[in-house]
Image 1: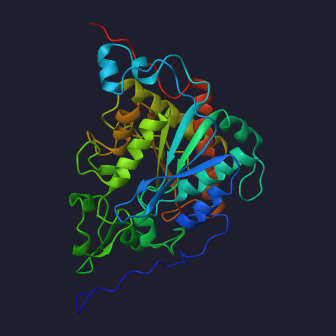
Image 2 (image 1 turned 135 degrees about the horizontal axis):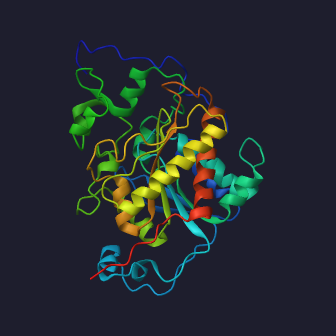
Image 3 (image 1 turned 180 degrees about the horizontal axis):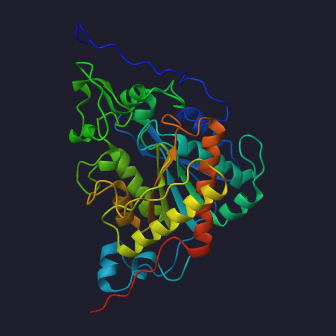
Length: 364
C-alpha cells in the first residue's frame, strides 16, 4: 500500500445487515436449496479459485426424440433445426437462471430463490402465498445457478445489500481499486481483461480469482475460465428453452439483445422485454424499463448471452434487477417484489408464446 494512499470511501449505510429471508451467501443458499423437497442440487464445476459452483433443478426434464446433430450451426446449415433440438415441442419448457456472474450482483438471485420456494410450496420466504405465480411457473422446469462467480462473492462475503450505498463505495467494491487509490470505474475498467489480481489494491467483485470478467470470457477458446466451461456444459446437457442471465443496476430489467443471435431471436427478446416492463407498470412498481436501443449497449460485441445461445439454442435474456444503490426502490421487499414480477412474467410469456422462436427452413 502506498505511504500516502487516498482515504477509502465509506458505504454510508450498513451493507452487512439484511432481513433473514434475503439470502446471498453461498453456504446459506446451498443449505436452503438442499432443504427443498423435489429439488435436485449438484456441483457442476469449480471456480478459478477452486470453489464449488452449485446448480439446483425443479421439475421433470423432457428430452425430445430424433436428435442427430450435436451442433446447432450444423443443423441450421443442413436446413432443419430439429436435428439439434429433437422432434416436436416440449410440454414443459426449461428455464435456466444464471445468477451473479458479477459476484455481488445478487438481487436477481434473491428473487430466484424465493421463486423456487414458490414453485415448491406456493409461498415465498416471507410466508406470502402466490397461487397464480406458482401455477404459471410449474408449467416449466426451473434450473438455477444461484452464484456463477463464487470467487467474487466470497471476496466481499460480509456485504449483503447495497440499498442507499454511496456510489463511490459501490463502484470500488464492484470494479476495484488501483494501488495508488484510484477507483476503477465502469466501463473503462473493461479495457484491462483480465485484471492481474496482484496489480490492484482491491480486486473488485466483478471478477473471479483470475481477474476475469466472466461475461467477456472467450467461451470457445482453449483457455476459457472454469466457470464458463461449467455454464456451457450445463447448457449443453440441459438444453434450456430460455436462459435468464441475472445482473443488477438501477433496474433496467430486460436488456436489449446482444449482437450475435438470430434476428428472430432478437425480436422475441424485445417482445418479452415489453411484456415485463408493462407488468411492472401495471403493478405500480418504480421500475418499468424496456430497451431504449435495438441492440446491446456496446454494439457488435460477443457477450455471455451470445455464448449460451450458440451452445444450446435457448432464448438468452440479460436482466438487470434493481439493487437500490442509485435510487428507488429503497427496501429489500421492494426489490424482491419487482424480481418476482419479472420472473413470473417471463414464465407467463413462455406459456403464452413459447420461448424459442421457430427457426425458418433453409432455402438452397
